Image 1 (cartoon, rainbow, N blue to C red):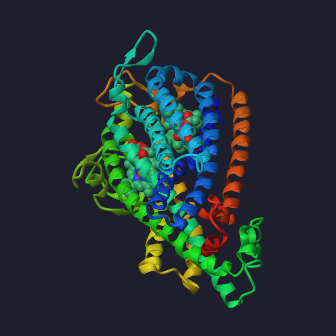
Image 2 (cartoon, rainbow, N blue to C red):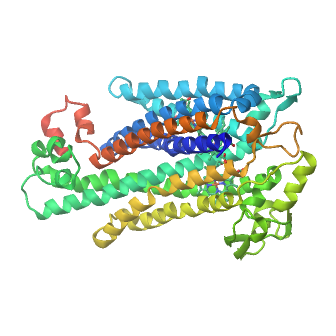
Image 3 (cartoon, helix red, strand yellow):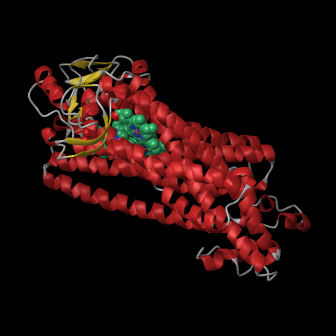
Length: 526
Ligand code: HDD
Ligand code: HEB
Ligand code: HEB
């Protein structure tokens, strides 16, 4: 393995890990804002508890998202110094905006939101979480603008003296068509991820809470103390300190109410959010496919393992062969002419093949191997779309089982709560696959040439990588792996723990307003 290979692995590994947390942050912030808004408008306490429950999970995720992001940034200078030099003038502006405007906004208002529950007027406090939601999405915009510039450089000239790209129009960079398509696709992917997360956690809890309710209903009126979280392995929450004791007989009713007033509404909200974001994903994905054909035809060809130029190219569902030896590729199952249609909206268009694109680059740019890894691009593209089946199944089954105020019971409930757990990781995998496709499909370029732009702006990974020895790179990849691995364990451990713990009784509005009298408090009796 060369130092270049290690550097690529290192960037790929760490950035995929950053982007497990990022989509949840981006999608969950607006969802929580919606929950809190519904609470403020309807005054239903279930929505307040949902806001606080998912708010806590959001904070854990956000903190680790920031930690992984900061580590991430070191890599540009460390492993990709030539790249940093080349793009520095162009990236300076959007990344400064990200740091100054977006991150400043996210973190300030998140702080106010965390500490403002009892100190700020309700409407101001609500505005804080909405500003967090806008902030994280603004962050995403700027960083996607930077990434899109690497896919399709615009608004810059090449300075032969400094041998770097120089910004001519920040506006052109921020309104790059690539950005305008990739941003809504990424955000929709993030909202699908957060929607799936809330629906899966909410659905799983809906089943769990209604079961706990039924069980203790059957068990008679022995008080809430020993049911619930306790014997379910909920750890240290349990019925105990959640007020099972002092709520007395209210506990078992409370569990059913919890399913009805908290988990069912939240799950249904999330299920509809999933449907809406899936629609946006399809539309924007289609737009991106067409742009990709114009801007990076080699990526298109390799995504389809299309070795030779074809007219009316089909969309292959299964391909065998070693892929990277183009002529061994056999398309086994193909939907005729679909790829041509996806690329250009007409069924008989001609798509250039990998071999022809390779020749084209050799003639226009010089000798070299301009083919991305066909195997990875082909399968990553299909994995991105394929994993969405998980969210799709959850949305359909979930909406069916909760239709007309229903809560799943019996065997349906058992299967539904399993489906929740199975579907939960799938959008995360879809996002990672989408990025692996986008980023590995642009190889060997780190800044891909823009066919209609400045012909001198392009940079290969070979030119971009820092001049380190394999040993240095191997050492740093081990350090990064250990660091990210442990951050991951912390993230997973905390998320799992607080999901299982569930919403807390002290997040009940009664507890937030201790001056209310005891009789009133019992009427909620969560
Ligand atoms: Fe990110 C946090 C750096 C890709 C979206 N990221 C975050 C932080 C840094 C980075 C330094 C912490 C402070 C801050 O927000 O400025 N991020 C990077 C680098 C990336 C990268 C170097 C390039 C590989 N990030 C990236 C993408 C997106 C985000 C592609 C969105 C589409 N990043 C965010 C965020 C985060 C964040 C939503 C995620 C979790 C969080 O804030 O808490 O703003
Ligand atoms: Fe990136 C690379 C992923 C974002 C910049 N990436 C890379 C890789 C991967 C990725 C996998 C590897 C590839 C190869 O083949 O080598 N990304 C990713 C993800 C994301 C991203 C997941 C989300 C987070 N990027 C991004 C951004 C940027 C970037 C935003 C800018 C700003 N990348 C980059 C670079 C690199 C990469 C520079 C290195 C070079 C190469 O190409 O490799
Ligand atoms: Fe996606 C990317 C399409 C789905 C996530 N996508 C991408 C691309 C395309 C597409 C074409 C690339 C671009 C470039 O490179 O240039 N998609 C698509 C389609 C579909 C999809 C057609 C079907 C509907 N996705 C999807 C899903 C998800 C995703 C489901 C998740 C959830 N993608 C994604 C990501 C990415 C992509 C994350 C990366 C970034 C951007 O945007 O670029």
